[in-house]
Length: 325
Image (tube, rainbow, N blue to C red):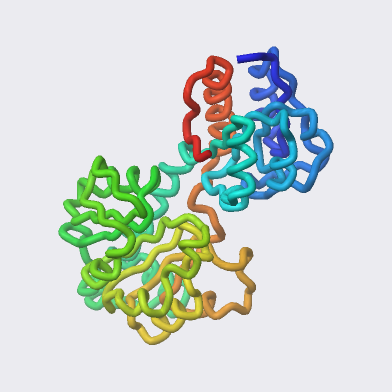
């Protein structure tokens, strides 16, 4: 393909990571947006420097992406791409033969490990033990031992079967669990038994762990509503590291408050940040992290490495990794 390219970014990388990116981009030209973000999820407003770019690396404004005919490839610094998942964006990219890729390959391992960590914490009663340490410092050894359990032989329902789910299957396989995948279109090459989305209601009542990995779009808005959450068994655990909009949070608060499910772990909410006065913060069986499932100390350097490898493929005319449009 034609080169050198002008590459735009709105990502404010640490100095050592930025230096690595710049040193390996030759002969291409890197331009920084007038407003930079240190958070990989944060979008950019309209930026005049994007008008010069052949490639965007970061979170460009979708409406500006639609207008720029010379922009041939957008590489997002996130796994999610909800703001771009619109017919206007798809049509604009398709018309000019442009591509949109994401960084899901950077986030599958940390997100999967994050879920596994919480599953094990629930199984071994670690949140309750921490609460005792921070509270009355009692010693309920018999009760704690009797309520702990093993993951072995339990059933996990993985709702949304992308790269995170595949990595989570790999991590869970040594436990001998019954793993069931749920996806919109079953391909037949999934590593575990996988069912179409419309059959999920039949499987929610048998799951010990309901793991929500769904992306945000029109079809998944409030997917886990009062009806579906009501199908989850009382001794089951609910996890959300997909998107907050896929869960009716009022309905979730109700089943938690009435102990209709054992507990919930949430890494994503609506809105974010979750207001301090929100009921979910106050429920003793609801555990929250501030959208950190994909984070790790090498995150920024891996984002750059992922982009640079894809840039080589782009220049050589090879298929791009993690292409979503």
